Image (cartoon, rainbow, N blue to C red; front, side, top):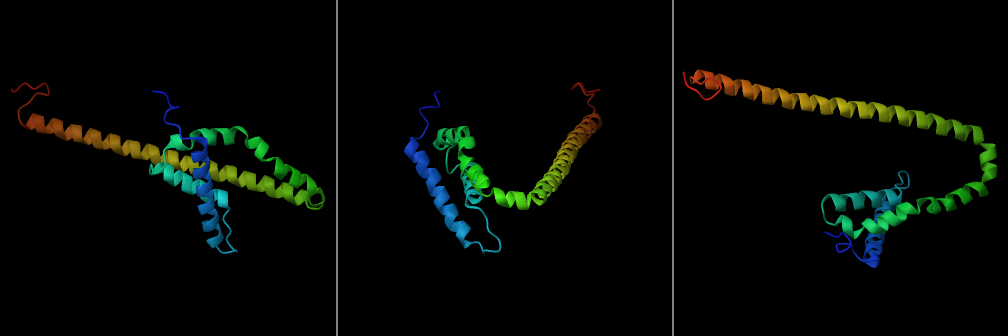
Length: 157
């Protein structure tokens, strides 16, 4: 089956992304100033939810999303230019900025490592519990067969 047939027209895809960003902007403006939430973050959450609950099909947003990912480096150029324009701030607080970035990166890596470790532990614990239940059920089934005079091969004695 050709996936191109299921693909939505590019204008529809742009409309879906624009609509989600518009709604995200409205939601973002409802948050108090003391707790700002970026519009793109809310948009990603909304898009993920719509895709998860199958309200929007992946084919409707896939090709535009792939295109945007392919040019993501270009989309960060304005941020780099803004950073270069404010080089005097970087010079004044450069050491502090480097230290904050360094420490926050280390904290992020440690938290990610321990979170991953926790999820792996929970997953293996869940798998072991499932295996124990299956084994227990087999033991009880075998005991029931033996009690009924069955020799595990279906032969009565």
